[in-house]
Amino acid sequence: MNTSAVPIKIFCACGQKYAFEVHPHNGAMPVPVACPVCKRDGTHEANRIIAKILNGKTQPLPPPSVNALLNSVQSSLAPHLVDALKDAVVQELAAQRRELLAAQQAASAELTTLVHRLESVQTPLFERLRAYETRIADLEKDLADQSKENRELLKLKIELLKEQVQTECAASRLNFN
Ligand SMILES: [Zn+2]
Image (cartoon, rainbow, N blue to C red; front, side, top):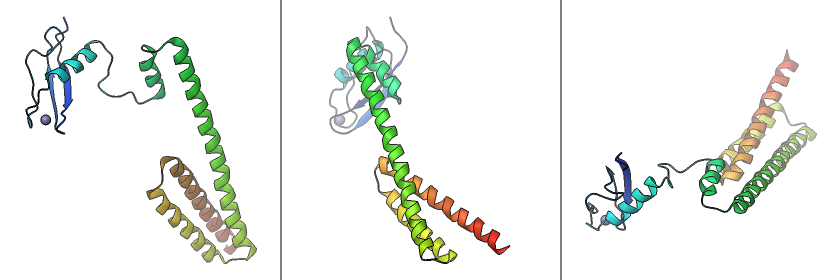
């Protein structure tokens, strides 16, 4: 019935990947296939992929968003489980927002402490700027090897420091003029 070509990607047990398009015959491979490297039979796996695609249970690319993920499980889960999953996702997002807010507060508190420390000893502008640049360099080094969650916080701290540098430079130009 379905005669349009179906894309098949097989990841063989030997590690070889091979892909091709096929017009299924009665919902299955019209001819046997085998791995081009180890010759292991791939017909069974190809038939499994064809069946999934013809049943509309898979998409060529994994759905990127939470909503797409929810929609994809919706058909295979009982409604009360889908609701529970949605609640869990909403709670997770709320928790992430709280963490981000706390991270923003921590970042600005850290900057305030640094600024106050430099002001309290009346550090000259160029030394203050050097302190900021050193801190920025440290943070950028951290940014290279931190996990995603920390990366957002590190980027935020770097942004705040750069703003502070600009503010102080602007203020000093005003003073000198
Ligand atoms: Zn193989």
